[in-house]
Length: 318
Image (cartoon, rainbow, N blue to C red):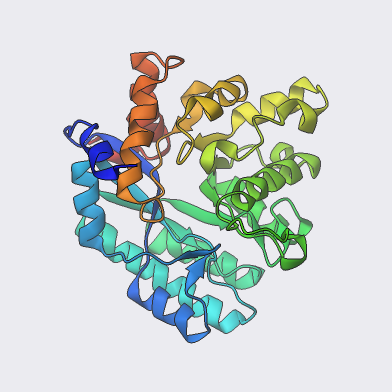
């Protein structure tokens, strides 16, 4: 496929989109992981990234603002001191980024889970002192899935704050990985998102903590397709799926959107690029997928690209 030609298909427009799935790879993060032998995310080598690359991409692709986050594999690799220090470094990097470009960037704080005491302290610092816009969590941390009782204190505090929480997939534990040639980022990511959603439902965490505004990546993984199976026809569970927010990074195609529309509230669908893990050469096809999908009217398209995000991040209204 000629990706250069594909890029030209998408009209350059005035930046207006709000991208809730946009990753950062600070130098200290990459160097810290390299020191312990980690140079990739779920089978994909870390792409080269800097602030200037993000800004240029955003300008070319009509993105006014990006809410940035640290992607998988996150920051915890068995050493809690390492995790605490790296969380603080990444969050302070994000705060400096926002201070320099307040109209172009927001950030989801990274927490040093599974260390609960340190995570609650970092949550307070990130939201109350650094004024970050929300929290980023992975679907599982060291094999423990969201909804597990180990995360109860964190979810109680997030609920008290009515926090916006962006949930990104992680590679499942090694014993759960199938022996295939497919990189985990291709298939296991969507399955891990589904596991987290189902676990939050089955542990009743979604019911206990209704004020957390949860954003799930990649249109909820396979949860929309499996919605009836997960719920066994229970309408209350289907309604709980509609209470969640979803970005449609790597998902703006008819293959996904037909099923997705049945289980997602249109006001809870958000634009996401997954940059820089999704190469810019493929981003126009995702933008075109929103623009040309026959299930979205013009008002819904505008809401997905901008207006729905403004309900979560009202500071960008100005």
